[in-house]
Length: 219
Image (cartoon, rainbow, N blue to C red):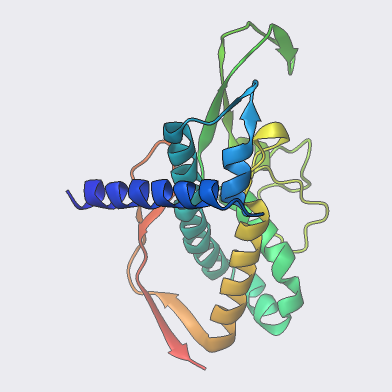
């Protein structure tokens, strides 16, 4: 019931915003969405509302998941954690390696729009193609020593944000959020440690941590 009420409120908010922007168009993302045309037509009210909800919630769980996995990964690699605390300039590389090491999503499925050959395999139009992010991010033909966590890995073409036309729209925001979060976290607390084994999220899509209990000291 709580979830349904929240969804109804978001729908209502999106509808009000659309009405406001239609009456007084601006340079906002909302106006751009309302004016955009797909195959010669504008989005219907339902399409706009659903896309609006997709935009505001799509990166929520994945960013939380990346945060939890990032901290757990650093705790599992105390030498790397110590280096990061001593040299915060390593943070951008640390975030990229965290995303490579523990992708927030297990896999994503697409549908082939034409017959093609990929990796020596024949794929027919209409076939479902599944990409496993962990497999891509630890491909030994792409990454040297792929099963080693290395914050200074260069280059690091991790695919946790996808690629091509489906590349994550919020990738830059997610990167910035993680950099700021870990920078502030490590600057203000120390002696971080697990007080109980983490509980994993039971999901074949989200590579999540359901619960992670920690102890720490304030700097």
